[in-house]
Image (tube, rainbow, N blue to C red; front, side, top):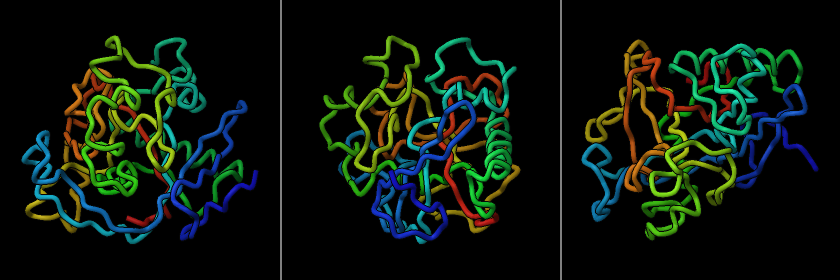
Length: 259
């Protein structure tokens, strides 16, 4: 299989996968999201839409990016932190860093290891997705409530959530992916974003407040109802809360100092 060049920018088709080799015969597969435009937020007629998901507005993604095909797993996390407090077993289950800062430290350490091994170009780094990047990758060109359409009955084929999870997490990658080949975007484990949420009516702050205590999370988790597992759903939580056990990480690759 031909391995794409991770250098940015690229002109690969949307959904092109690229495995980045890790230790112990593991790989972290990234999927290409090309530049483009999309409508962010809930449609005016979406019965599940919340006020903080509106107004729906056009967002331009000027720089394509690579995003992890799955949430980071426990076995991937243990490569960097063998003694990390993670439940034993369940290697393919989502890892759940206790805090946003723990996840940030993981991105830094994994970047350094991949640079040292030559698996990752020196000009690229692992980072959190922005809210815009997360929703753009999740929608994958769609405009419906879920990337598979507006039929809620199909959600169980794509997500572990309140109705089918048995109130627990499950191994990643068992449900159907979105059109760009990304798994578990809805349910199973919520996902940290780079910054806090912001008011769509006022627009995104020009200079994000990096010291803010809150960070956005996306996608819902295994205990979430269907309306909390949508493309537009957004919440925020305390970045330092050590009880954030249901939040994980889906890293992106971006150029050093790109944001």
